[in-house]
Image (cartoon, rainbow, N blue to C red; front, side, top):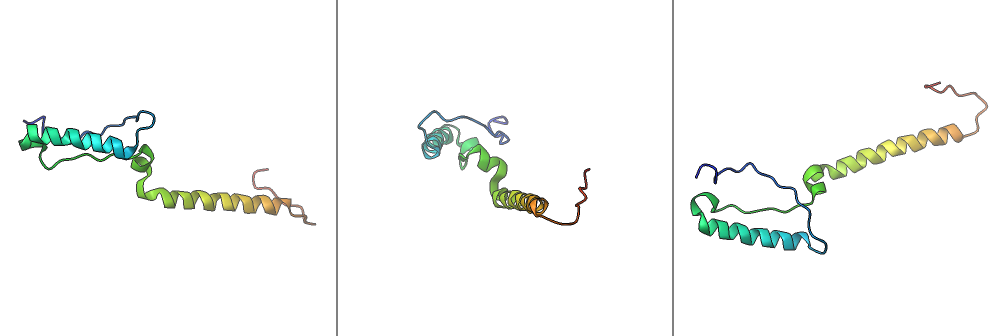
Length: 96
């Protein structure tokens, strides 16, 4: 019973071609349901959740990450534009 009640496992898997997340989750929920019937003391009221690896790793921080990347690229583009503008004064490059 002690090992059956362990809830610290996460699994990473690759879906077969043409299998959707919805299909995979439906199949895993069916398996979880059979296990709950077979082992009601440890597996009742438990289920599964299927998510992409990207969603699992990035989650809700995706908009913030994209914003950060975008603002960084914007600053880089601004610096490049400044370097290309004709200017009578010589520019000092901070890395030269």
